[in-house]
Image 1 (cartoon, helix red, strand yellow):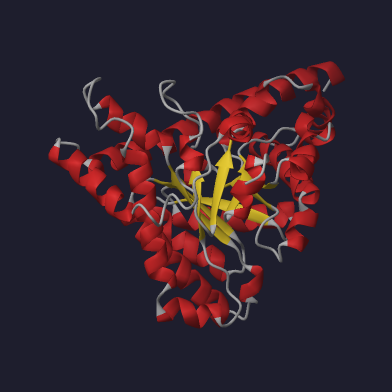
Image 2 (image 1 turned 45 degrees about the vertical axis):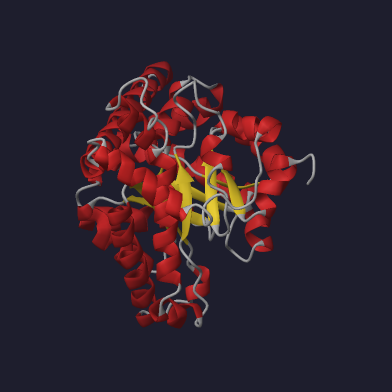
Length: 370
């Protein structure tokens, strides 16, 4: 035991990634400081994060907005120019981690336009464009785990591009994601890519599951707050089954890395729950936990490390989900609602981001007399 809980978490097999990014954090050295002193080895972004960052009116973006306005760059391309610059910068900050971990960590994620979540071909095209625009070996392109986008996961991996599969809520969909991942690596092998350079994570959303299930339970129900962690633990059991397969062994023998489960949406939304529960209750090897900075600080201050809290709890997890089913909770309906809401929320955030940038471009064009 040490007095550095984040170090203990890292030593237990959990890669700590920050679920946030903005240009002030980059230019002021805040991200570099977290990497140096808080065991942060990766970054995730999403449309909501960029909406908040760029929509805050930060002066850090003013020069680029002015230049984009003077050049008359189209709105969608302006947004991508701004977001890819931030991600490229973060990739450079984390390049040392990427080298030290042989490409496993030091990763930064950027998401395809969420309006394309139901369009596989367009998702592939944008994923390739993002990889080209950022042009860093430690980039992860985020693709949603909608049914329509599953073929895109395989195709993008097959092109040698590393992928973060996002918006996973159910174990059944996660199994489909694992299948798409394996198929993508097999395609990459056929296409002559070095499998050791391709990384992937599968972002399994946690807290939102509890929020939706708890909403369907009585306020005094003893089943409140058990769904999300049980669901995630069973997902990890599915991961273990796949990496024990001969199909995976064949790929691993050629240098492929596992697609690690990534615990996402780890900020606690119910104030009656421990603010570190989606971190310290999901500790095991070969996982990523991406946290907003508040959760990172809470874990550093008062997290509870008690060994592996996933692989030792499978029986408990299955019993918890069975109890919820007996209580009338339809988990399939829960995850369907969450996926639809998740896509819709990111689309709304993207549209808000477009509106913010459009307003800034118009103001800059007016100021420049164009």
